[in-house]
Length: 512
Image (cartoon, rainbow, N blue to C red):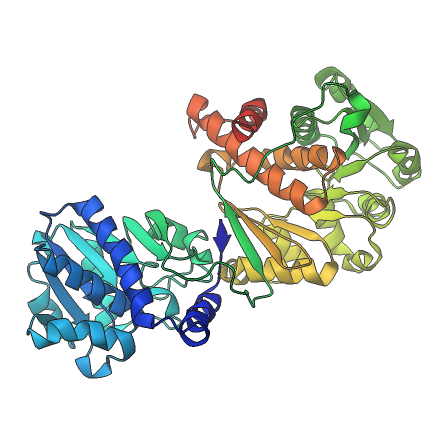
């Protein structure tokens, strides 16, 4: 589904109102109609509603909703946080219905909160129409105290557009935020619905079209799509019966060191489950026995090593290993010894094929960032926030405050695809295209899950897909396989190999 920033939504509103001569009141009325249906569906006609409104357009949606409920005989209490003198535009017009009838309650001071909210525990449904997507400052004062009281009530909470207090572009909490059970957003979802902690605060999410032309031009440099379970846009091509192993690509995986061979084994098994036709492993000579015993479907090629892992002479075997390969995956269990840097540098700066770099390969690149200037091929980097911090010299917390922005900036700067791992995985390319991958489970928060992803991406690349599409598909399939593994083993007990074993089922679900 398409995801847009708050500025883009405001521009779309403006274009409909100014250029297409559609009054804002009509758009607000369309939003209120969607809210009305959601409220009746969620609470029922006999429920008691209290609607908290701010003085902007989000509050206007709340006032229009309240009018519809009131005129339909539903029990509703309407509360304006702030002064009626601050109301403006369409919100002021819709608030006028209740002001004229002396039915509008006000919270203008701390004292008003206790008076106005003394019976809040008796309400069934709270509607949050306070801030919406326009909030950019920290919530404080009467707004913070009201939101805290809302969250402390036993009522179910429906948020209008996005829970008040959540930054709609980054998902960050601005001081405090409404913890909603249900959110109805308008026209398109926003990044803050899918980025944590906002993703946790939205509850169930539904999108309501309000009459804005889908074909209006977007002006932003970043184009975002979100992919949750059961989307139809993502699938792997059905295979032609008249094919052979060479049809489905020849992948090389360079991995492992003494004590870290398991990472390479997981990546290998994942690549095979992902459908690659031929798989060749470049592994340190000191680990070759492990791979010959555990990954019998792959060709394991021993490369020069000391008793720990790859050494300075291993780089000379790379040309032979890469001969005829369609894609490369490098990093799982590689070790971060400086002696391995030449191997990673040669892999990055030679061989004009799709390549995915993960784990120790990224840590080694961060020690010698200038080699990025000489990279060739269609490249994917798959860091988690700590690895991304090393690559960018940014603090982890700074990255998490705007993960999409930082991912896009890095991808553009280095002309590559950046997959930033997390509870919401972000995939960004150098053209500002972004995918938010929403599949996955907390049970995947274990060492080895990244190796599953690396093997999958490499496998999909080798079958003829570009770096960005491979990263999106790989992350989506890995997350879906993790969900299936959790269903069988539970989030505590599932392992990365359980995820690998469910890749086949995940692909089948995708292609249904």
